[in-house]
Length: 84
Image 1 (cartoon, helix red, strand yellow):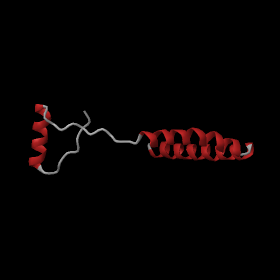
Image 2 (cartoon, helix red, strand yellow):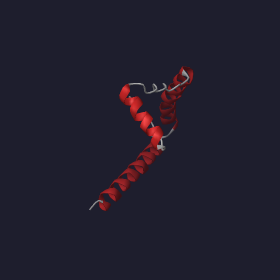
Image 3 (cartoon, helix red, strand yellow):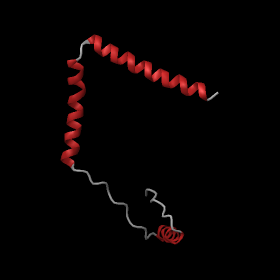
């Protein structure tokens, strides 16, 4: 069971604790997603990456990859410097 959001009111919090302890806590609602929208999103993601890679030249792909790697390493070196 996922932890429910704690109420700010002390009386409501006490009731929630008693409900959880006695097994009377309300059931968590299932996330409602439209299955058609989920399938469409997966389809778009599956198509998008290969189509973009096919449209880019090799030189442009390399430039994008180098920029991303430099950014990742820049973030990494900053976080390790501040921890010392």
